[in-house]
Image (tube, rainbow, N blue to C red; front, side):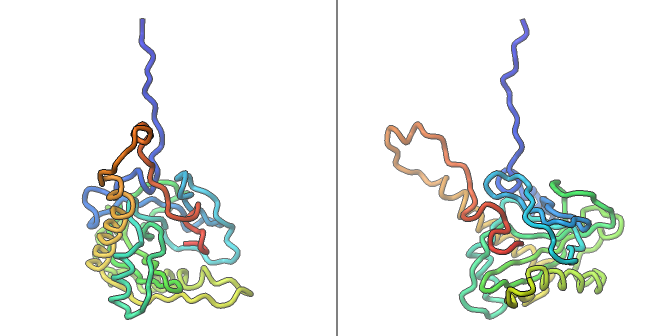
Length: 243
């Protein structure tokens, strides 16, 4: 008699259940939420990990690259401290999201909700109000056009200008007042890797270290399941106005 399999499978949470990659931060795994042809804004729901419709694009601005985040990263204390050190801004906080990443490729990718391997070449030190909101700029690993580039200075200037314009304008909504958003610094590959390292430490401090510490348990609490990592606030990554 053949035994019935009891094995079950489930999709890993894109933020908590996937590694940033064994070679991170030199090469990272990136979860892609939106692609340049998307006419609506998709974002991961932090609680479930399911890609959700955040909002229709109200205006013509569209991200010119693949756009998403690096799993198991968090823009917290260490990333905010680096932002304050480099910009001189005071009272900077992390925005409480995974680190954003733009991935350049010459290929047309039809939809998001997928993983890619990307090589960071630089980034934007973006400040949204008083929050650090870094954008890592990367190239798709082995891409025929961009894959051999190693430094942000090697990227076409019009492409960088287009990315800057997108990030400085996509949160500005007519009639709601001007939002304080700036790109305080364009940094190179080494600084991009430092930001990623810090974001990985911020993630570990918030989600990994608390569970690793021994805690006194009562007889009843010992029977409970271990807690599942949850986002610190908000259901989607766009709760505070969109990423």
